Image (cartoon, rainbow, N blue to C red; front, side):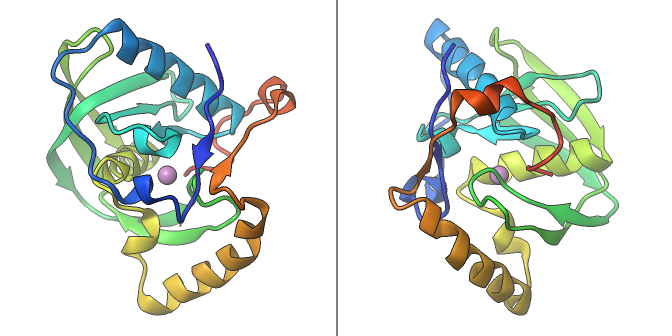
Length: 187
Ligand code: NI
């Protein structure tokens, strides 16, 4: 497995719509393994392929609820109900957080890493994470859910943070791998 570079806000691939996976291959499974390793190293709870510079419709999730890590390939939202508003962040927009309204519960159909269809229903944090990652697969970021004022405030914070990433990629150091916790960043 290997750590992948994470593209940050401003990298055009984050705004591209991904391509559905036609058949799940060993190459996709390798990508999934690398994405999981990268997600843990970055202390995230979810990571989508565009964030690592790829255009496949794949995301990985582990909200530390005993269900993860798992991949969702070609996910579709079957049902979403209720509302919640909680703080959200993104591994591609480090150090920027804002309250985002999401459905309280969501049911998603996807393919797993073996190419078998499955359905998953998540509430609360898992619902938020599923919706956040599915947004990524359609070129959408949590900032897009904010009011103009809140978005402006997030962007002014980002204006300072982004100076750390002149190449629009975030390289994880091996030291970060050793001390992984879940849940810190991508809520
Ligand atoms: Ni994100």
